[in-house]
Image (cartoon, rainbow, N blue to C red):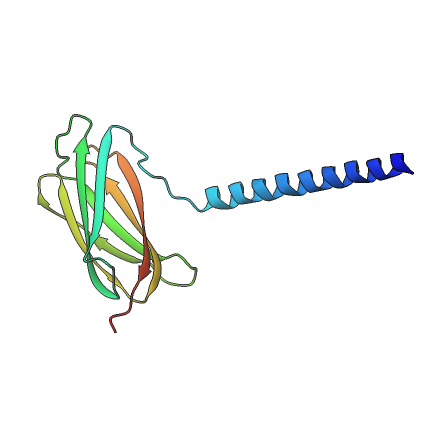
Length: 144
């Protein structure tokens, strides 16, 4: 009888370990499938911020600063800002950023509702190379 109990525990342990392994793999596949490339181009520094904070429904400004690997501002880049709700069903908002000073870009985006948003930067350098960067904006608040 003791041998039967040990086999039962061993079998239960294998099932538990298998379930844990499958759960971990499912999480890995689910999160990697939804991720956007971050700094897909090495050798560049991208600083981004949004103002004012905390973010609210309505107009917000996205600031982007680009430097090359030697610390020089990256000029003449085309920067498209895409803002999208983290939950499905909403249409994304796209705006073109303008270069305000060498290496500094700004775009006005409009958050149409409260909640969690993802802001993606689609950057095309003057030589045609592309960089993408993601910024999560959590808890956009209503204006009331």
